[in-house]
Image (cartoon, rainbow, N blue to C red; front, side, top):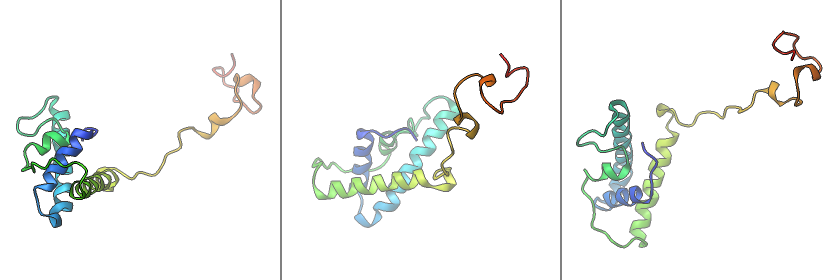
Amino acid sequence: MRQPGWHDLDAGVRVLLARPRPDWPEVAAALVAAAHVSDRMRKRLRRPVAGRGCGSLASEAMAWRRSGHHGACDAGYCAALAMLLQALEDWRRDPARGGARPAQPRVQDRQRGRVGSARSRSGASSSPQSVQ
């Protein structure tokens, strides 16, 4: 899925506000998953797919029923925004999608030694490539 911006979040919140509050977790998860599928199709075909959008939350939300709500700071809007952000976090951490991977070391242990040529390091390999 494309990186969500404020417009994407606002469109997703309006989708949630058009539904009863008990349905929000399922609707938010379905909206995020549908945007991910649309983005994968766009990447595979190298163009946006008609009826699926470009893979952003906003383009996916255009196909869903949305609320005409305009109060961006009231309690209902904030609760829907929190629910959508939680759905995004759950989607990112989903191990079936490849999320929540263990941290990998960025530098190999051998690269943490002294700086300089191989000749100046004790215990350096003596291959012809290491002698300069």
